[in-house]
Length: 127
Ligand SMILES: [Zn+2]
Image 1: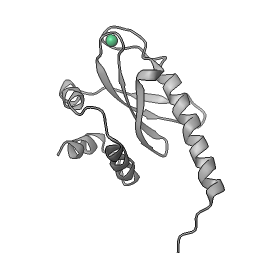
Image 2: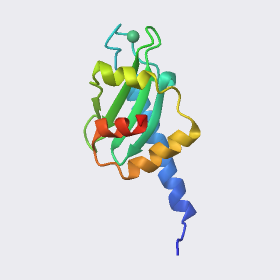
Image 3: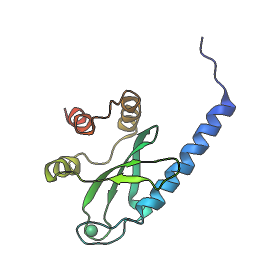
Image 4: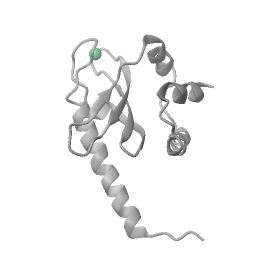
């Protein structure tokens, strides 16, 4: 028997929205490592998250380099951004294209069981 508390769902949704906006603003303070242009919030999309670990995709508005970013939000500190992908990983990522709604849903479902292996996660998504 599953009971749904709509009030609680609304709260969770609100928190996610706040965190998403926060993380986009944070990303906008980071510079492109190729041309040093700042990322634009409009170019940042949230792929999904699990607890404090967020996955984002962004592209530089100047040189169009695409980045995959994992961000860890910590309670009382500035979030920690991890974006040091190898070139091979980046190449593979550039071929993925814009995710469909179904893919986003897959990602969301997958993240619930995510074991922390970032490389494996994207290997599987390519398979
Ligand atoms: Zn750039």
